[in-house]
Image 1: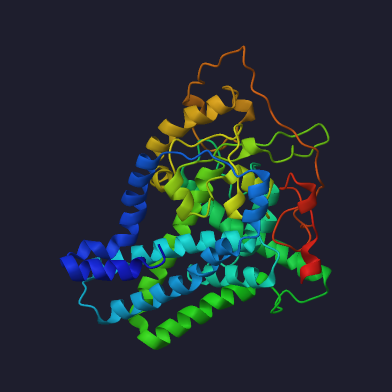
Image 2: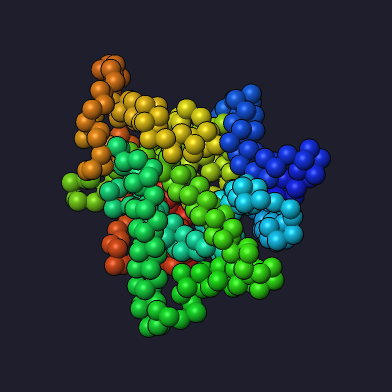
Length: 406
């Protein structure tokens, strides 16, 4: 995937068809879904013994580390092509979509590395995010989304009846506010200025400014509009993934006023093989939220986790067509909750009421899994510094203060 700009150039050279400049988009929208359809779901899980070996197998770490040099080699090559290749603006736009898909998958690589405790992986995450200009994701995802997932307070959880196009600005703006709020509070606790270089939002954004400035200085202002286009597409793809991962799912409010612990029932999953490989098993999303420090190669599929009808490569495109998305997903969501709309995260501005609840076999009641609350934290008191949320993990061993690693 990160070498898609090179593959696009080779295909154009061989066939002289400008459409191949959009090879990255074709790979994601056509090739991966077709392979998924042929290979089908893979519901196998590693045994505990195999998982222990896999967790320490450095091959899988290098699969994420090496994405970065390939990602930026493709970006530099694309800048060269935008300046020197005989392309019209439609072909330049097509190449920007290829680069944007690479940047979008780069955000996913950053997601994997940003959850880890090691300093170099955290910095690799910020570097991977520089291409898309979305460096605040490193902070907000770990300290905002994982804490508030599947609640109305989470901007990255889509509500039932909310279209992707209404979700997109809410999630993007809410993510920036959440990241800034967390970093401001963290630095205040350390008696450090919010404008300090230690501000993880500012230093991540600074990487994007440095990257874009360097590319414009090297290739000229001609590349700037296309850099903006590819970054916008990368962000749009990330927000598509955010939209479908928790659509309509809601954690119940307990008698003590706190939300029930995040369980496997609070994330949509897909076991389709090819798209899982390309996305570092992101589609096994329930296990990721239950165990955010677990490396991607050991993530498990869970029988109680709600399942998407296809892999992300299909569902992302479905999400941008609201009537089609709702026709496919609304009945599935209601069936997951036994037709009970009170257990659904509903968009107050949406039109959820017109959906007929599906028939449910009353002999098989729907069980809501509840785990003990691991702790509590308010927006003005974020969790301790670290690549994970204290309220997200179901494994007590992972409730670790990562300050010790700084």
